[in-house]
Length: 218
Image 1 (cartoon, rainbow, N blue to C red):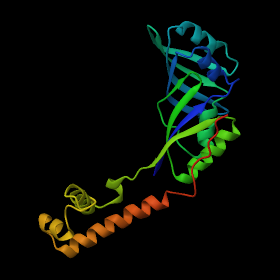
Image 2 (image 1 turned 30 degrees about the vertical axis):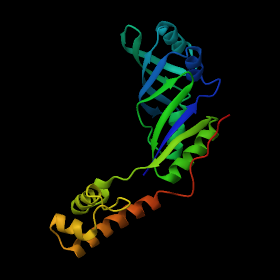
Image 3 (image 1 turned 135 degrees about the vertical axis):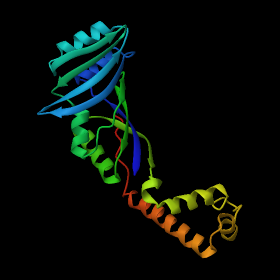
């Protein structure tokens, strides 16, 4: 399944982005979040030298309905707040993608890891645009969970083939040599490898989709 690394820029005028830009050295770690009626609740760790000022700005924001300081030590506080403007949470919900935690907000920018089918990633791009959230796609790659995709026998044989150089270019191990090394018939070795390769290739192609999420840099 595709996994993407995105950098999002919180738009000007959005309270938490503005606070973050006002205190560019502060670190906001979003540990958990969930929707609450027309709002969103988040558990966040804030680390900053000007912690007292930041907490006061949270409390004074019109977009924050409720704020609780759960723990505090030196320059770090664990807080829970409810906001009427959970834009990232709403974007993820609209695209049908779980909001993966934790992620960090620094100087108005969020780096976010997303794992989802290609069509969901494309929809996420549409959702982010609709909320006016500029973003860039730093990286997107395919994840295949071999342990779930293959049988134990297929997985063991595939690993052995890779270890012995069967997939090297040029090959360091022929099919006959691999079968002899594992003590199985050449026909069994060939069929098992082919079935494993078929599953992996089809899974990869199925998740390619027609494109990648659109990027916005302004």
